[in-house]
Length: 114
Length: 111
Image 1 (tube, each protein chain N blue to C red):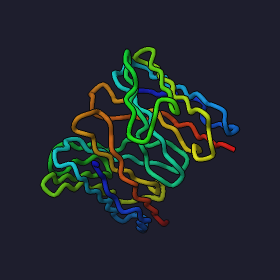
Image 2 (tube, chains in turn yellow, red):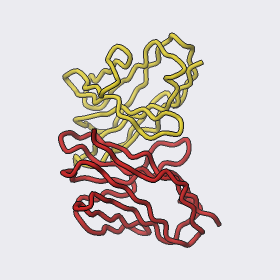
Image 3 (cartoon, one colour):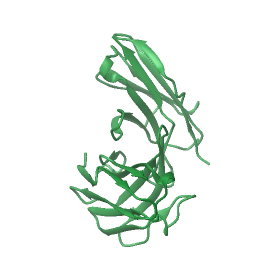
């Protein structure tokens, strides 16, 4: 399985500010995914980060609010922009492993917006 | 809208019992199915994957898949208090690599 390092692990931010979350993988992967897990709920996909092209966003998520970078095959960032308390969630980076089937997750970023 | 359904629980079982977790999915052509365990405050951890009809065993865990009924389950034998967690069922979208998750079943194993 891939080793995924995500940071920061947690942060408390003021509303109206932005936070950039980093995801580093120990091997090259084609696709990286960003999920959100709101308190007490399951995982919702925000977008798929594609190397060399723009991210693909799911319904309800837009690039202006969640810009994503994917400069190479081992790294991606997700920015949560102009934050409000409703953005308080756990944000998770995920990659599909070498078998191209199983997905693995980073440690997650617990974001609290005050 | 592709959906994955799970009973949210909690499912309470005594230590040493078999815990049975169930999941149904809406996309009839799905081919890849996964069970993740998530402890409180932690990220999901893959515990089982299954791709063919029937049973797949790994230690105390058995995944069961019935594509005709669009049903996948996870059995945990000899349940331990350390198995207490939320178990997420995930189905891979047939057109993409992304996963669709169920809401998760919270399992409580009492000593």
